[in-house]
Length: 239
Image (cartoon, rainbow, N blue to C red; front, top):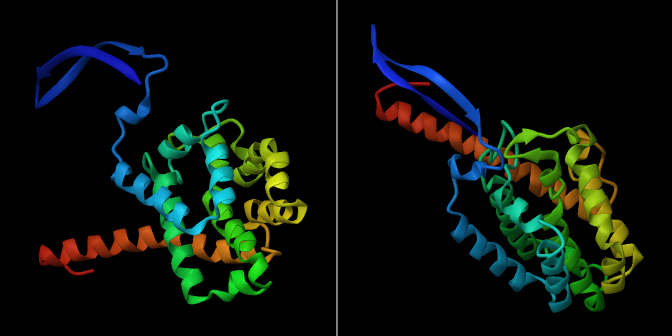
């Protein structure tokens, strides 16, 4: 963020005659960037969806990770872009993308309940928690990969590896809540949710979340194209 001072002049049209340009340190960028989303509305839906679908211990674990007092995860997660150019490339974009993925997951398990019932009734919460916690945190590495949509010096590691690095801090807590197998499947989602675009999904949770993530990440672009088409037709144009 810079403070620019100058004089507005008029010579073949108005222009700014710049006198000084000073960088403002530690100024929050989100105050200057427009978001496409109503964050309070999405935040309410986010937590409601999680409370509805997670077990009590699953909700407590996820809340502890996101709202850890020793980190800044939730603040960064709620403000960061989901991407620089492609989808949800605006403040709150990462949060909105994740929230929409959660809603797709909620619908997915209603249509295909066997994806969490296939190991018997005693494992239903175990698998359901795995699906909902994994899809909530599948892109969490983006809070280290980007800063307000600008790639950081560590972005070459990808948000998948950075996400694994970040979540390693909670390994013991996760294993104590579930077990080693749950943790390993959880990591498979973080590492493999891009499928053939990065590393092929090798587990059922990674495959399901890859499909939902791919569908959701392409849908905003399609929606924007359709909106532009409607606006052009309204002006008498054709595409």
